[in-house]
Length: 80
Length: 155
Image (cartoon, rainbow over all chains, first blue to last red; front, top):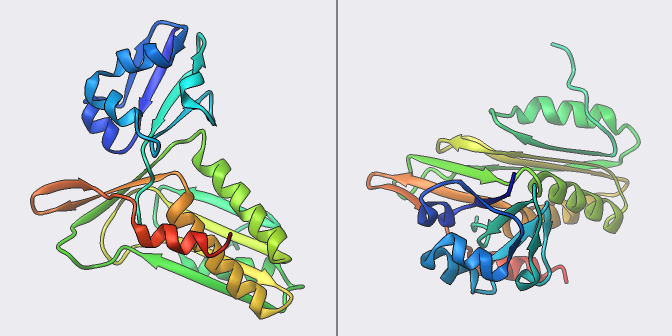
């Protein structure tokens, strides 16, 4: 089953796709490697959040995604 | 026409198609007979800057749940009788409604403030990503400093 990585907002354009499946388990280092350098650079910024299994992580670097989890990469929300 | 059935005290929705503010407010008013006043805000896609279309994307695991928490927070903070918070997703054209909030309270001040509170939070803290199509293609919309300032008013 693996882990599904979902890309939102501008990260979707950078990734060139809406989602990507990678083998489980997935930690922070694995995530940075799986998404490519451009998205990884964005993930390094404070304003980009990561949700695992529908919950926004207080510390994204503590990510531990297991088989079947969904990891969502959330850039800052757009202004009005 | 059959009257819309709303859930009370909170009715929170993501809509893939257009919304009728008149119908929604009639139903909201009917659902909250004990309110002394109702305030509503309808946000529309601004018809300026050469924007041909606006697309809103969301995350199904977070966006609606976040809007529910927000509606509950407004309900508790301003002692509301009822809250309606409807947000469009998908592609819209200028002039189309994008968001409707309505607040029902015993007294008007709470209803006005709660609508303002809901809108500031929906703009700056709800999980929506927007991009607009201009003559040269699609452009993602960045966060705005003013939205953060508006949000900070409530802390």
